[in-house]
Length: 214
Image 1 (cartoon, helix red, strand yellow):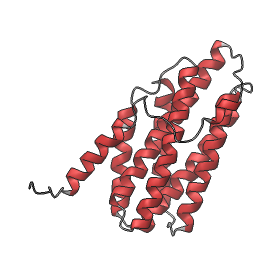
Image 2 (cartoon, one colour):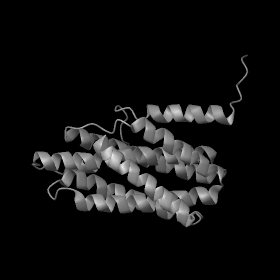
Image 3 (cartoon, rainbow, N blue to C red):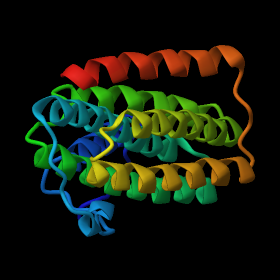
């Protein structure tokens, strides 16, 4: 009988990264109905359509990054309960990913061409956060979600007033992200140092400006 291979940490990281990238394929379906299904499409002029598509492309890139962070963090989390919490959140991020991709296609555009870069970089950051211990790991989740909620609120303000379908998606995402952050804090997440929070904000701004265009 063939012996089972004992995978090293590096092997596990590479396998998880490969599986994660495979989940970014367009065929991946959401586990929950798209919140926009109950909302009619509105007439948008070309400028409004392009702007809405750019915003949703940014949100799609952000969900790619969030899912990668959670997967990386779950891989290196020490407590099985924390690991399960992170993987559950990653599943909901997959819903967000699919909803944003659907909306981008409805608007006649494509997701960011740098999607694999967003995933790989965020996965590495998440895995590193997990190695610092579960309190830091959960604190990283709480801070990430705090910044994501602020980002979503900004996009809700920027969307064309008539774009109710995009708005419905972002409202549900905001609700989910708020809950993820609250759960991480309640589970014992530590407050991150100011320099780390500012670095996260800077990285988010770079991705936002790039993904809007590419």
